[in-house]
Length: 98
Image (cartoon, rainbow, N blue to C red; front, side, top):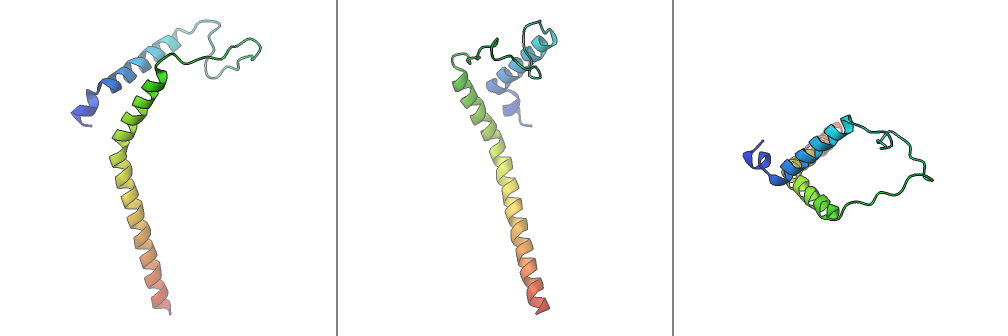
């Protein structure tokens, strides 16, 4: 991995957030639901995201896409190339069988 990715402030913030979440989930308190619990709709209330979370989500999405784009481009190039080679081989096999 490159140095730029390791020192990205957004990645550091996400890592810190995940670490805090893991630590807090280890100290679960009664009354706090976890993902595997079913919440009674009569009792529970809708959780509204904190202000600014949409902007943070968009920033995280951009960062992930920026990091994945080169890998996705290379993968698609290989997939298309292999599909073309298979199609050409099948076409040649069909001509040889005629």
